[in-house]
Image (cartoon, rainbow, N blue to C red):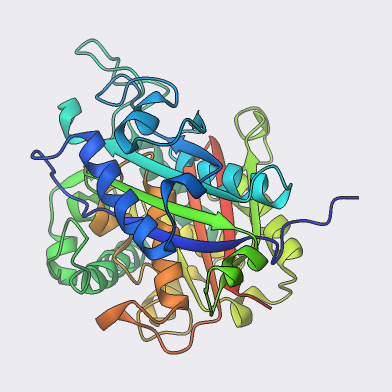
Length: 399
């Protein structure tokens, strides 16, 4: 019977480019930026890499297809490079492949890297996978803000939340993330917001206003993983280990069942339960120290708190307003600014989330450093509320 990956794989090094409107940089430049930092952090040479996984979503823009763009840009030593894509969760999928490769004994040291150049697509919002002026704006049912606005409406209806109360709660989500992002030199948007600014911003899809939506950015991030004994032999101490890494994918139930009410993410609840079981976490609210979630829209973060079992059903609004997920709260969320301040270069986001957890666990997060975090969780979501894929990764100090 499978025993999982808990403490079998550790992070040897990580790197992250500056996210933003990187008109001056090609996808290859961004890859190099993240790769050089990761290799320096790991303290190894290219010849020590055994395998690589490459995450990018917009395959026809700059990066081409397959694993060749990563291999050529980084001049990798003719190792296997596999391109992965799983909607917006592709970054974590690349990490999962590298981690599983090491845990299975197929390779000793592996690298996962995600990159995206969204600004070059010319879109003002998150694009679909095809580039062109004739892309139907209703595909696959509506544009992203409309889909996630329906999530807000369903949540409000199910839990009897006053419309004004919900808007203030999701405004707090954005205000909190921007306060955190100001402290991060690699974030795209580094300006504080007030609740009044968020509430008075132009409406994109009711109740979501301009500041409830993450931006369009360019960026890259990379992680190098290995076994604990190899990391120790290379002189590494205070190792950050994977406790669990789980994924759940919609099978059509949400769209074809009268049981799903549109107010939550079914796959997140499944992936979270599996990850907690693998990591040996019985009381998530008490045991998780910090988290990075897929806050493509502020309502997504709020709902995710319940889907990850960190808030009780219908209680996330109160927890958000009480500051539970603020930087000085019980479970800080988006301590680096999240998608809200980094934007969402699709292939890179999942790896970028892990980068912050890694820095925090090693005490290297600078002015945003939390006090003695023990367990970090990342939640990477792809698709829309009614059909999606969700990856949940849990990391912490090596037991």
